[in-house]
Amino acid sequence: MDIALHDHPTSSAAWRVRIALAFKDVPYRRVAVDLRQHAQHTPAYRAVNPQGRVPTLEVDGVALMQSLVIIDWLDRRFPQPRLIPEADLPRARALAMANIVACDMHPLCKQTVMAQLTGRFGAEPAGLAAWQHHWLGEGLSALEALADPEGPFLVGDGPGVAEICVVPQLFNARLWGAPLHGYPRLLRAEAACAALPAFRAAHPDTVRGA
Image (cartoon, rainbow, N blue to C red; front, top):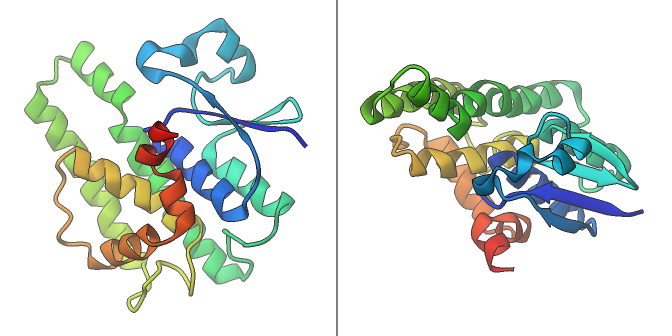
């Protein structure tokens, strides 16, 4: 099976997939997509991913898009270790947390949205920061409430799809200057994940240095 991941080191959506691939020890080729040069909008890349986004996981020439879809496919194709819980209620909670990040927080705070707010609506830097901090706060507060109170992980005894989504989002929140002191459960899980080889291998600094 030939697997290629089209990604960019600092894309948090691509970062999620790198963590999942590392957990499952799946061999793959990295195909760099330079978002700074808008390579995602070239005809060649649009032929692979019509949406013009990263990540894309190509499996024997078939393109899979959207990070949570890719993680679900990996869990089905390579069942161990499981990243999405099998039991109904933990599964629902883990996927809810993943979707809060991937569907509610990330889309509202990403750089393409910031560019639109600036270019089309004249938003100033202070307004952009307030926008990001508002939506990050909304999402992080919900995630904190949903996280296991004892930990160290967010759902159950080990890391999974919830941590895979939350850890990159916390990284971005720091880049954007959002306050994180009110989220001890999330920070505890982040610290636990930082000690794991899969999270270290997928980190943007590791990928950039490879």
